[in-house]
Length: 220
Ligand SMILES: [Zn+2]
Image (cartoon, rainbow, N blue to C red; front, side, top):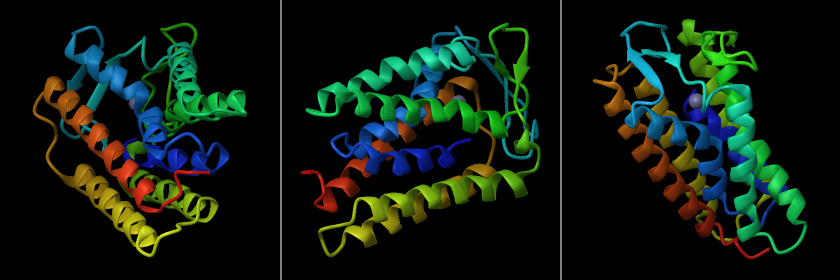
């Protein structure tokens, strides 16, 4: 899953408003940020197999650190602590919400991945595999994104005239990127995929920060 991960990022923001939206955007991809780094370091492994599933060309055959349920839990917990830099009160709530947003990555991956997510015993891997049917996985990603964005738009109403326009333009652009990703060419190599992922996650977090700021809602 790619763009659908941002649904929980949007939806979580009203629950812990001192935490900036860009940090939620990093949180929901934190597992993949670590995965990209470990793929580039040659620690976790992926094969590019065009047509592996309809929704993804990635054969993610070895990612026991970032995408096992224990690894996901540990990474989420650690990332959740970064909320302490932003929340002055109700800090436990902020940490919990940010950690939960981060862990939502594993749950959504579980829905679309074929069984490649290790449980406690790393030889036991799970995944419902909806990526096999892009006409199910793609709408699911878009609906998840849209539902989250609606929760955010209502929960953190814009105080500026163009705040909502900017938000929905951003959401539309994200949806377009997802459609391109689903039907565009497969990545050239694992390293290219990891680089693209890191650049995309960084850029989307930056844009989310701008949208959040443009709504004039950062204070309170
Ligand atoms: Zn992932």
